[in-house]
Image (cartoon, rainbow, N blue to C red):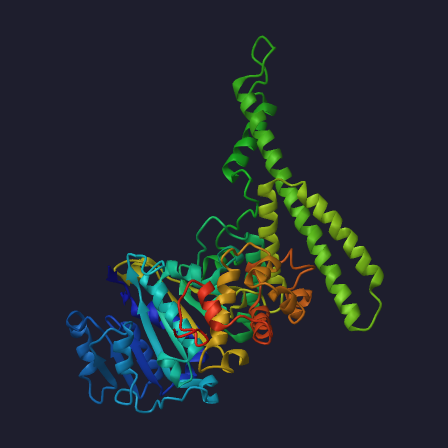
Length: 541
């Protein structure tokens, strides 16, 4: 396994990335820079010249390999660079760097101190996690996945470099890594990405190949709508994109690439549609005969055309039934919003509520008439609609302030595409700060998210009931966002899937659990998660 990230064209990749980060980096001018696995340091040098840090610490394990590249930086007059020949992703080594010796202007803040929840713009962390090929490691898809998960956990516990406050960090990693961390549709919104949403207030994709891989994509209609909103935000903020760095989506919106047709999963390909149209014209012109000379049977060419027409009609009918089911449920969601709004205004909504219940029952009957694969598709489309219909949108990707910059494999050495991710930690929830000493509420958060996302497509009602006997009845009454359609809630919790639950809802659930008189002990919860821990109430004999 070797490391990628020796930027081959620093004046394009690094400078364009810094331009995209823009004014947000200005707050770090004169800061300390902690650079983990910098490689040939071309990206680091560009950042250094932009921010003019008071010290720039290079934590590079392959000292012998990279020393020829690092010496010009280390030996310049009044150099701010300092090389530490250790591995920054080995916590024992990193702890030696996070000390007064290397960071004298970063006093460690005691646990429980409110200053831990303040932004620390005097320290910026740069990381290169471009290990290739990707190999599974301790239950994670890759070493980079493990390190990013540990960074996320450090944000919640205020450990590692987060013990100096909320420290921003920029990470170069393999382009594939962003799929699990920063999903573009609800299909990939699972435990890891949900925990990222909780731990960070911002998570931006600065540069990547900009394409969404995998068969499960929410469709071009949603992407087009969100993409136009992003371009409007960029224009208002004065954010421009260097020529040649336009993302694939931006190129489609600007007419530089053809847009996708937006058809469903059963739609026949564009090539087949064109073939059908050509064959129909051939039949009309007489180039293809309907019948053999005897006039009793269809010709083989015409039989093929009839089969293709039946296939097209069948796929269009299935797509239409799925769209109809989605449209009708969206109407129910709008009626539910109207009911809630009227009640908040003190108006009578009894008739509208009764009408809503009747239409909801009819929708359920019609939905059961769909085939299983059509039901799955309809629910998937519904979940993606929920994700963009709430304010703010559910996914970090849909909240982005700008489109990511387009990078190419040949711009790195060895040639392999990378992505740059920008992490800004969030303020910890009050319920996670209340008992920082024993961390029991953090264990509950881990338990809730783990239980829920064990099966992301299950209903929230089923997930709540699986937490603990009696938990559902206590929690649901104390979590108003679950049933508030203006905040992503649903008509009922049977129709709200786990993968569309917001971090606000999770916070309410954890807070309600912490006030439950009959909640299980920390030891019982850890035991149910499959762990073993000391139970202070157990009999020592």
